[in-house]
Length: 348
Image 1 (spheres, rainbow, N blue to C red):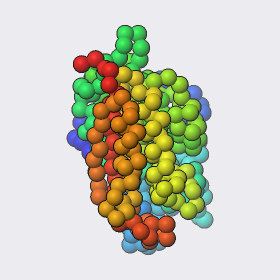
Image 2: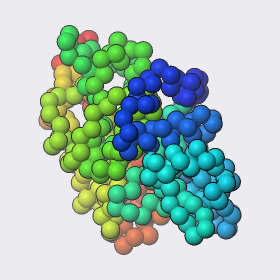
Image 3: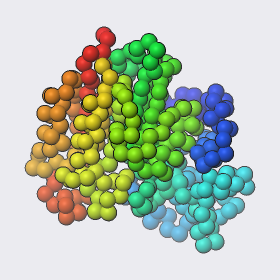
């Protein structure tokens, strides 16, 4: 986890009962499931897929007996391992599948600080999988460090909400973390939060995750900024950045060793920042012969934009197993990087 837990999210649930009980759709059912799991004090930090598989290999054919086994390690379980009420909630939320004589959850639940997030059960093989892992924690930390009380963000104009957009939101963890970072600021009461993803399942999970966190959000399904209008005060994004042969939506970042999507999102976002607005982009870069081609490609775009910016290497070596793929034959390493760009013109 990234910070001192403080007040438990399940205790804070009473402050937004409308989000807990409204509606009977899939999002509402998923939110009810999250609430029930949170009430047990559940916490789980999701590791890399390789670590996850090593743990499963070590456990062999063991079945799940705890909620961490079921919703964390994605183990099959006997019906008696969970209460009848929880089985009903899982069934109603559409996440309970038969697994021979056992049952299995189609979702995992992970924690960041005091919030819980639904995402796809291990292994994430399908094209519409919703990924969550160490990259999500690095993205969350990047946001938290970039928004210390939001003191550097331009104040909202009178009569206009402070607009926040999460592009390629996945589980929605980034937007929830950003909203938490802005809590207590002079703009938190007027937040307009929008989640975007091309994957409908991602938006379904993200919507439930936000509702469980008492955050009303707007959903924008489709290709990045093409499906939203107007300017934004804060745009965050952790787009897919690997070159995936299967071109799965949650992994494939397009051409140029997976950086094409990140470049496009950054370029579009720079054009949509309100005066004083910020772009926080976390992505991965294939380093070839010591050269960061993403930074090289972005630098002229940033210099042409009416903004100040900073760029840092957050982790020098992520997804090292990808270097075994032929497309990465000339790659030294894949680095996680963070770009912060601020449009000029905001009040000081």
